[in-house]
Length: 76
Image (tube, rainbow, N blue to C red; front, side, top):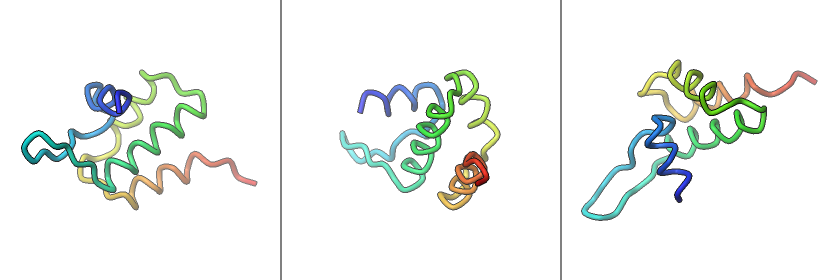
């Protein structure tokens, strides 16, 4: 959970939806989190990940983000 909050503070993930003291994460949050983890797995630095994520529109759907993930996969 600390990583998710850290990523949110760095702008890599949107802020969670709040209802009272509870925070809720959507499929969009999960898709963006998977993208960040995949980029880390490819050796991207946090600064490079920030630049990459800035190129993705805030209203991108999980399917849009999955397309970015698929572009990272090596061609076999």
